[in-house]
Image 1 (cartoon, protein in one colour):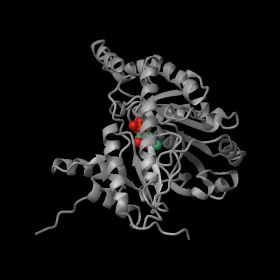
Image 2 (image 1 turned 90 degrees about the vertical axis):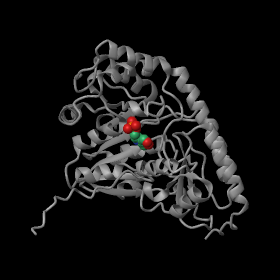
Image 3 (image 1 turned 135 degrees about the horizontal axis):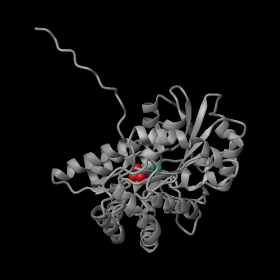
Image 4 (image 1 turned 45 degrees about the vertical axis):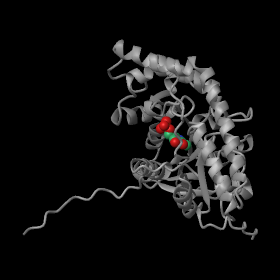
Length: 398
Ligand SMILES: Cc1ncc(COP(=O)(O)O)c(C=O)c1O
């Protein structure tokens, strides 16, 4: 019998959080009760005015291709949003409406990176950055931040991972999983590290509107020395509870407009027309709903972080934004982050993301997400309090 040769697909890394979400769904299908603190999925419904605008847009015939940069009115609304919520001033022609922030990050990178180029990832970093670089044939250079530097970088620390082949630095503020917000010192550090280089910055600001305690979101592109080298990526998934709509936007440096236009035209073409139309309402007319959701996230953050800080051996700093608590479990005496994630799921029915999903060096961490409903957060906090009673003595500091 002749053997049939079967072609082999590339062994590409999957998204750790999508895989955990699948596991949660499987367990629930088997009848298990699982509290999903693993994924950054907002528990709220999309504001009604946005849903109505989408229905109307469908009836009005917004069911065809749009220009690759997006509908004129959506680009204009995103330009305003970039100014109002990111502090980034761009012309409308520099704004691209894209199907999701995730695609916006990928399209930005695809517009500037060629195989073999190096891209700096600041750890701990979001799960999809490294796989995106793999897809593009780019080489990640890891800047590993830890609590000793309060997860902050400086110009020398950036330079220590840059070389003549560095093509971009990927920034994420407010950060997933760290919950930290970039400060002015770090923006200056970026400007200093990139001066006289041909290094771009791709700044993922999907959580720009989810900042707590009256804090301020600072975008690299708001710095005059960085504006012409920075892609600012935002979107409506998190702030507007619109994950399923897949709508993002990118503020693009003028010199990269043609490159990203070509990337969008030859891959997705454009974002869905009726979603773009409804997004104008999202960006202009539902500020009160967004503010109410952010206030509730802050309340959940406080409740969850209070409970986590009471678990013997768990250490964390208060997240300044985004939807995550990043917990150092190295002194908990129950194994590494993967083992603790397994125990939390098996013993308490709480799904979380293990630290190694956010960089190979972060095996002693676990990420808890608090986008899920307030009932789930309260139930998780109660379970953690009980779990604490059976906790081993925290390990001493080295
Ligand atoms: C840091 C970060 N960037 C981007 C995204 C994706 O956003 P979108 O739903 O617009 O693709 C996420 C989603 O979890 C995220 O955490």
